Length: 272
Image (cartoon, rainbow, N blue to C red; front, side):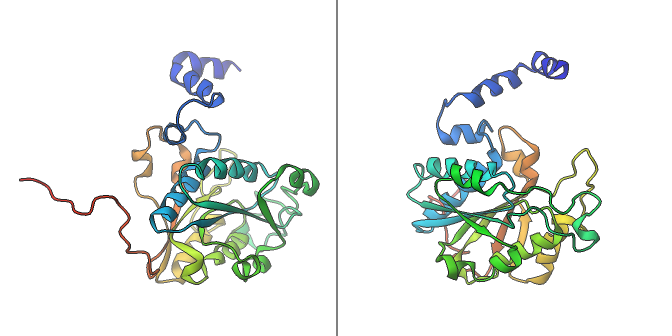
């Protein structure tokens, strides 16, 4: 409590933004720019996915969250989808992937069993279903539910994905969502990886374990598909934040629309 009081006293801007987060003031884009939405990382991905879809002429996209736990992320995605659909003429379908039974047994050291345990983050099915209004739950192990997902659900192209499965093994299986024909995904898919940073309590993430290892494995496996951070994203944000480093883009370089020009200026010339 004393630390919070000192933060507000020494930095009154914190207090201003804390109040702003509780008040629906300003346009969606302004609130996104200033990080006053409840989950600006989710908002960034959903907004930019819908914008890219609109620029490429898509009328509908899919948004996927891998790892639901209590379901607060899905509830926020539902709120964001409703708001973003008012910004762009793009319908947004939401899918939530989870075992429904919490974390499975770790496969090996890459799943960080010193940090995660089987059974963590078990879902309360009935409580969550009662709160959700527009999300399709895809329950089961992702190694079973991801293959064939687009055929089973007749899903629109995926535009954004949120990965919070914690394990290296589960994230590898979830990333197979991108092993699909180009018609099932945007050429650049906005992704958020919750576990690529190291919290104070000692997960000590690196390129050889956890989600970072799964990203490295994915990039080694494919020549024409890569997951990359958005270089310098935090420098472009009005309010730089830790989540900026957890945003990735999934590029499909041989996607038919990858080279489609999407910006407004038909011709750019610089005067002498």
